[in-house]
Length: 503
Image (cartoon, rainbow, N blue to C red; front, side, top):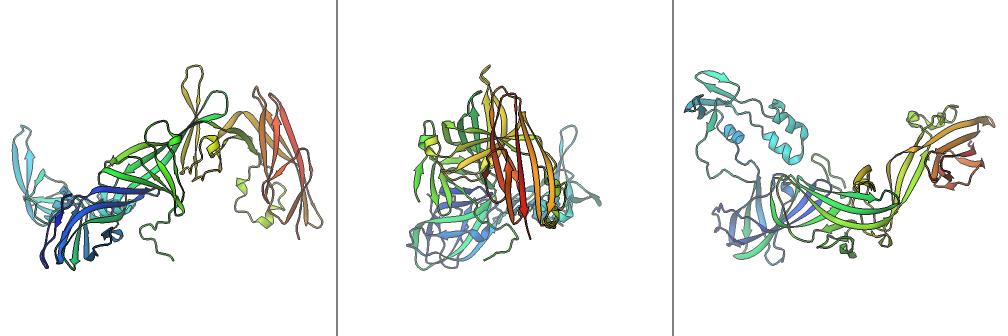
């Protein structure tokens, strides 16, 4: 590492430092923590230092400069963050009200210049801020040249006439010492004594994210799955990180958005879940889970990178058919006290039968690791040609080890449900209600299937099933399930009567 030579007291040093040994922790909420190691050579007194090459989405008040050994205290008297890197728009803004030359190419390829005065540059400072802090409205308006975004079309005066565009390619004077080519931090540091140290600078930045995705592959017949998990790293920070150590934080970390007010382990290697090569490792960290990439990697600006983090073969699963026959969406917003007096409530029928895939996230089942939230894509292999066919997708939430996942993949084509109410009777001065239902499930497949018939009961003081054709499982204070087998090419009919009592 090349040291930064710091000045004597009161002097100014305009030196640049490019950090090495970078480490990044990326969160799945579109931000990251960056840690750079830099060499400082401080003289006693005040030292002015420039640190070149931070991200364009840096949160300035998150910057921490420290000696990781604790040996040398660093007193930061002042910090400045500049992200207005040199661009045509910025230079046009600097020369507003002044004349510059514009290069024009004639049709015959000859060059000539015209002199023009920049009345308005059209450059929007809000555009850069919007990129850094995620203000999509101002970014959009600025990009379109809307004055609300702080920009607009450039206005150039040539020969006493105004043009609402550039007459040619602008030619600017040479850059001044104050110009910057990359986002830069400038510190004014005070050192009690001369010292040399490897300091660490860390900061929070937007523009970086990661997400998990899972490909689940099943044979044409059978319920086993091969599970391949990927993490996708997305770097839109405005900076390339070369050979960086990368960690991924999974979990719902509380992070304030711009403008939002402030309000008051064991390690487990995942190598056994991957086929060959170094593996991503995982450990519990505070209330979250931290995944570490096995090798340093380069994350280029505006690049997406995929890394495999789990491969499990032969995971045992169950295919579940669930019939939730009551279509009650049209009753949202109704007062619960008045619903019970509506004879037509709950009589609308939904014919679709859901297809669910269920499997245990356990070591015995080939998995057994915390699974970050992400998209799941299901495929089946066609034995006729060996090709994979897409059969559905969904998302899973963060799932701890030893929990069971149940994922909806679509509606069954050959299984149909039908639900109707056969009786409705208010009694005891409208303080008791009895209802009766008939649910039919028809199976047009060539093999029998197991179906879970889900029934939602009213959340009123007391309910009791006083008659039913099949045994049921009470899920909670509102939901029950009838678990039945429907024969191939046949039909199963479930009936029940429920009684409600209230004061």
